[in-house]
Image 1 (tube, rainbow, N blue to C red):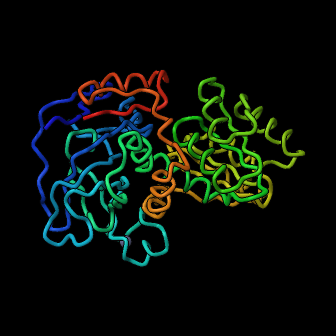
Image 2 (image 1 turned 120 degrees about the horizontal axis):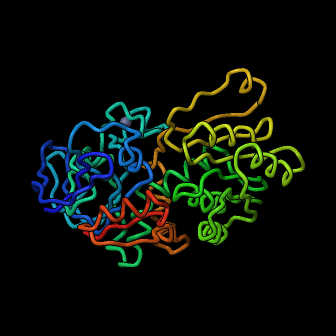
Image 3 (image 1 turned 90 degrees about the vertical axis):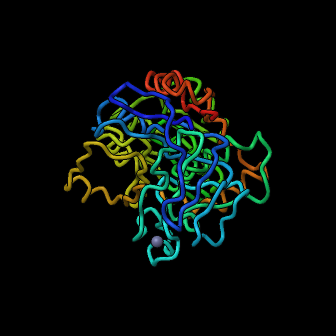
Length: 340
Ligand SMILES: [Zn+2]
C-alpha cells in the first residue's frame, strides 16, 4: 500500500509500505475512504516535537472495515467506521465516565499511520463506531472531521461548560477552534466570539455560528472580549492553540466563575499559580475523549444537521501529502483532506 512517512522536519514522503495485518485478536484493518493532516502533525513537521527516525504518520481516519481479529465482536467487515486517535476498551471505569482518551488500556489507535490506503486499528470494538449503513460520498469529509477536530472542538465546548444563555470566546482559528464555534452554536450558546485575524477563517467561523469577531490577540484581545461582555469576560472560553500566549489569553478572557476548555496540545505552557488562584476560573481540558461524542456527532452528520467537513479547504491525492503539509504550515490551508 501507499503510506505517508515523516523522515525529518519538513521531509514528508509517500512510499510503498507493508500492508497492515491483524496483529492482535482485538485489531481491525480498515481501508480509508479519506484521511487528513492534523494541526498537531505540524509540531513534529516543524521540528518542535522531536521524531525518532522515519515515522508513519496520521491519526484521523474513516473508512471500510476489511478484516477483524478473532476477538472482535461488534465491528464487522464491510461497515463504515470512524474512530479517534487513541484506542480504548470503552468498558473500564475511566471510559464509562467519558474519558476514553485516558482509558486504562489506552494506546495509539492507528500505529501503522492513518495517512495511508489502509490502517490497523487497535482495540477495534471499543475504539470504532459504525455509521448506520454506508454514508453518501459527500458526507465522508464531515465523518472524517468527527475523527478528531470536530470531537476535539466539541470537547473544548463541553469542558468550557458552554450552554444556553452563555457567551463563549474561542481562542484559535484552526480547524479545532472553528469547530469549537460550531459546537458552541449546537450547544445553545447565546453569543460566540471568534478570535481570528484571517478573513476566510472569520467567514467560516460566522457560517458555523460566530456572532462576533475579535482580531486582536494577547492583552488587546482580552480587553476586546471584556468590552463585549460588560467588562466581565466570557462565561466559557475554548482554547484551541496550546501556547503560553493562547492559554493566558483564554484564562484572562474568562470571567470569575467561568470555565476554560483547553484542547490545544500544550507546548511550553506554564501557568502562574497566584494569578490562577485569584482568577476564580475553572480549567478543564486535555486530549479530547472523542469516542464519548462519536455516536451523537455521527447522527448529526448523517442527518445533515451539521457540516463540519467545511474545514477542509484543500483536497489532494494521498501521494501529494507533502504539499498538504506545506500548505497548512504556511497557513494557505486550514486543513488538508487526502484521498487514498
Ligand atoms: Zn477504558
